[in-house]
Length: 214
Image (cartoon, rainbow, N blue to C red; front, side):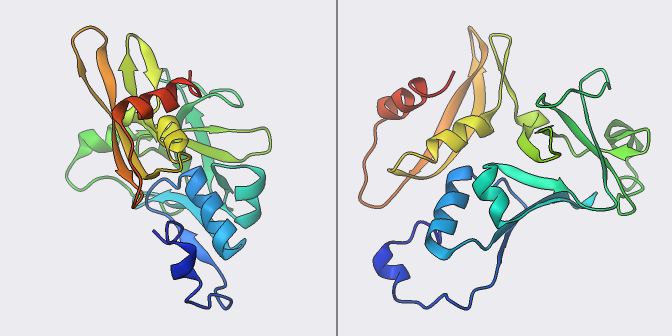
């Protein structure tokens, strides 16, 4: 919302004493991070974590510029593993379910041993997020495991589509979800919030995706 304000509104306020801004609790779109720092300067921090795990990774203002989309590197005291469905570690750049071990993870879910067992693996805990890591140890969140859409046997990550749609000049915010499809099992639906004074058709949204995404 702050990045979406008009220049006229922003210029009414002196933000020169603003030291830092922290983003957490939900995915930070790449375009939102870029726009925010363009307007307010290099002072945006972003962390990844969960109630069950505490803070796991941290990305600073420079990271948003040099590695768009990263949630940073693991903070001291965190051991992180990315595992496939068989429980094996995935390679650099490959997507896996993120498991973490630290001194802050919960002992288990209250009176729910089944949920605890499904979340724990060899002392590591997962809240069902999918991520990848680059060769320098920077992590990138791809989706939540239950948000992944399987259409015609292909795994589709709504986050990738949302990040792309955020770059459209007429789109303020967007959420992409999976919906039932009689032929493909699932297909995608985007819920779009337009910027004031802009218009956009469903066909134009689809064409914008079709020309830039696989």
